[in-house]
Amino acid sequence: MPARASSIHGIEMDLVLEALARRHGYDFRHYARASLKRRMTGLAQKLGCAHIAELVPRVLHDDALLPEILAGLSVPVTEMFRDPPVFKAIRDTLLPMLATHPRINIWQAGCATGEEVYSLAILLKEADLLHKTQIYATDINDIALAKAEDGIFPAKAIEKYSDNYLKAGGQGALASYFSMGYGFAKIDAAIKEHISFAHHNLVADGVFCEVGLVVCRNVLIYFDRVLQDRVLGLFSDSLSRGGFLCLGTKENVTFSAAAPLFAAVDPALRLYKKRG
Ligand SMILES: C[S@@+](CC[C@H](N)C(=O)[O-])C[C@H]1O[C@@H](n2cnc3c(N)ncnc32)[C@H](O)[C@@H]1O
Image 1 (cartoon, rainbow, N blue to C red):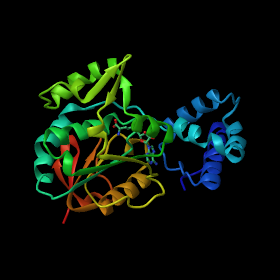
Image 2 (tube, rainbow, N blue to C red):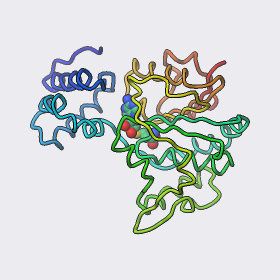
Image 3 (cartoon, rainbow, N blue to C red):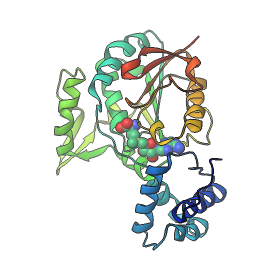
């Protein structure tokens, strides 16, 4: 466990984290401290607590509040085809290699509200691979997961994401994968049927399934080095031999204890391959 803080805020945070870990098994003690402090302060304000420590009895005695607490501590910020060059590289480099497999299993960890996993599924559809693909999309935040499973987004957001889609090599119209109505866009059932959504905690849960590609972007940045190493080991264990790993553009395996497990495919775009 990291060194204990001595400031009042630090002590209060430790108490809440201890309560969450011991009462519910959710261990945030290896999350990067500064952003966790911001989120915990925001959560305390939202729940009408004058001090962070007032979250402790809520954590201990109000089980129904747990999803809101987990949602408050997570950052489900996302968008479709975020960092388009990464999606273009998945389209042009990874999918042709995955195409040789009889079945394609993909684990997208930290799916938030689903924009990224639907982007992946659209790439697979356009490469004519979706019919033989199963994508497992997981997150710790059940409120975000429920939105992801609904697959309903503001129509205006789809207009905004169209630019990303085109930059990622899209040839058609992003809107064609949605049915539009009342200012909202609902993802087509034919895209969604290849995705299973599930609660999975990268801190505590084990290997999810054997997959040829793990996509986990903009999640490790919230973890300290110890936790990053654990999670990268988990991804290596989940990947079949020669399987691919895609991280966020601010994340990498280079300085991790897990570095020997992976070879770079495109280091700038954070695409790696599990070593044989
Ligand atoms: C910033 S979002 C990234 C969304 C998407 N991958 C992207 O890059 O656009 C980070 C997500 O990681 C999830 N997360 C945080 N800790 C997690 C954990 N221990 N296990 C699984 N997911 C976690 C959060 O709930 C949040 O939805």
